[in-house]
Image (tube, rainbow, N blue to C red; front, side, top):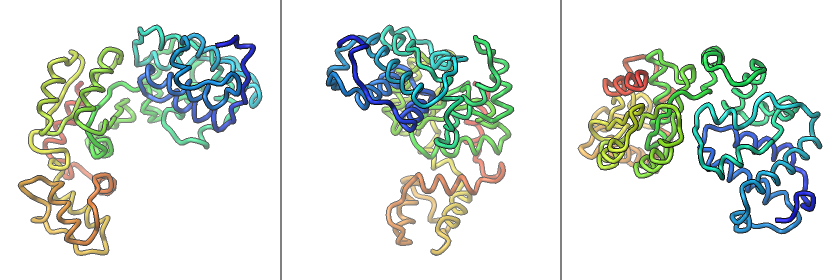
Length: 338
């Protein structure tokens, strides 16, 4: 890489900056997000010398950080009035993560001006995201570092920000991510007020790999929720579980199997008001609730059954504790006690 003074680049647009700012302030492993965002900034905006992802892989982290600093900060001054930082992106990540990897630390130490973005950009109207709401609240309430964690907790409860995150729930699918916060709210345990972040991983094998990745760097408790058919994965997780964490194996079937049948019926009828209502006997099968629902969808000519659509409808139809099964209540109680 040539000297920083020799590089040529085009300014980042406000949209580029806001998207990158959003991605850098998400609750995500810094080892992944910094590299991805920094590579994206360089590859989209450097005009000379010619660079590729392969060439970036060969560069030192300090060189990458320096290039991004130059592109970011010059672009900021092109768009906004300068304002000195009250806190850095690294300060935010240090609320959750303990990073020791030199490469990642070097990227995290990049001196990016974020204060000018916070004060100069209308980012809350551009991107609706809880992490950006939190940044805005943090900016209005803090002037000195380090952050006072008691005050952060107070602000989270006052503004229902979710951030700073206090616990992470790893699940297999979108149904759990969608419904756990709603069930918890019915039990007077609001996930946003208490900093409970639910992350669906997209499959049982990914739950294990993500837990194995995060257990060494995440400084908050992790709750791992798995379907009953993931018992081998559950056993693997338990064998490496930190003392601060907990794993739970659903007693029978998958998450949809522990939803009350009356709630599923109500949700099906709500989303398919123009077809014959579901019969209670159509919601059960020895092959599990999802199989029964696949057959129900076919019998009504509704095409392919999709869990995400059912989850959205169930979310709209949860109203009180009668919509919770005993196992759902047990799971919420375990999360609260973690």
